[in-house]
Image (cartoon, rainbow over all chains, first blue to last red; front, top):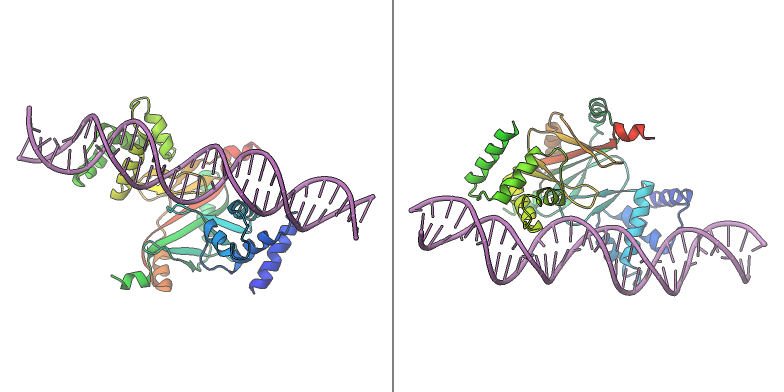
Length: 143
Length: 143
DNA sequence: ACACTAATTATAAGAATTATAATGTAATAA
DNA sequence: TTATTACATTATAATTCTTATAATTAGTGT
């Protein structure tokens, strides 16, 4: 499953003329297998066992490459640092404002909002983002 | 129009026990009259003529106060710095990925997404955010 | 006007991200 | 296979945005 996603992602990198280095491969693999929508620092910490000499700049450089190709999305919240999400099927996120947990939430894409926005504003729409905020079940019971 | 909005906002501050200082008043007034969804630095620069000694910390402090009371919303995009938007009626934003322009886009609130998310995830939903991305008419013609 | 308390200022500190220069290494072709 | 070349990585410094601190200033209610 995630193995084939990794293969496809590597293929897209090669098509774009991007070299597959061990560090780059590891960052990509971590993103695909991660369920936590990691920050750059999460990735850095997770891989420092395997790559003790890896620089944090390498993580950022690779995240930028992946984002420019469209393999991943960068999510910015009110919090300090960006989070990164491997681009799979269309889904939205629901975020716990107490503990910060991010859960995937499958919902049909809001196409009609996009098309109405195009008509009203004259923009050519490329995509949208939506997140829902609230308190998760765990945090609710703790009160 | 904006004058009455300003009066109402000042009233809400007083109700909350927040003092009305000249700097605070100026930041609030600027936010209400601004159409550009300014950054903290935008506000700082716009007011430094009137308040040459004002500290940038004052801008941030006041933005935090306004946000905690609910007078304004903080918008975080992929860009470096947060933008601030005076809370009027419910609306969404459409953002030009070329020039960064942000335009208000009026659309009914997506209540049904929130309620479905509650059922599916077990969260207690407080709010959501949605933005649409694309290319504005100006930037389109420049290509 | 006084006293109380919050707000402002100036500055430093912190954190996230990007830039730079030297070194290393993957891909390509001789 | 080896040499070459261009890109990637590393280590570090610099930048930018935001928050914290301490001293001073100034609203607000009495």
